[in-house]
Length: 167
Image (cartoon, rainbow, N blue to C red):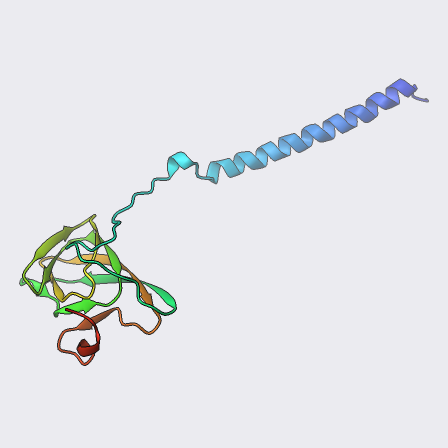
C-alpha cells in the first residue's frame, strides 16, 4: 500500500515530535535527579565568626613579607584536674581561631585576659607575649596567614626570641 503524501509528512512530523518529547522527558528526568542532590541557596548558611583589622586586645597586625603560606592547625588539649597552662609564646603572623569545644583563657604578659568558649571565633594577638590556660578538654581550629619559612609561634626564652619582634 502506498501512503498518501499527507500521511508520510504526518508520520515524519510525528516522529520528530516524539523524538523531541523523549528528549524533553529525558532532560527533565536528569534535572529532576540532579535537583534532588543539588543544594539551593536557601540550604546554605554562611556566618563570619571573626573579622577585623586588629586582634582581640586592639593590637594591630601586618602580614609577613615573602611567599604567602596559609596553615590550618587543629589543637586538641586534654586538661587534667589542674589547669593546663601553655608556655609563654607569641605568634609572628596574623591568625584567627575557632573554638570547637571547651574553652581557652588567653592571658597576656601584662595580665590582660579574655575567655573564649565553644562556638567563639577570635583574632589572636600577634607579636605579643601571651599564654593559653585550659581548665577543660578543648579543641580549636587555628588559621595562620603566614609566609614560607616564617615561624607561626615562638616560645619566650627561646633562641628565636631575640629576632622575633615579639613584645
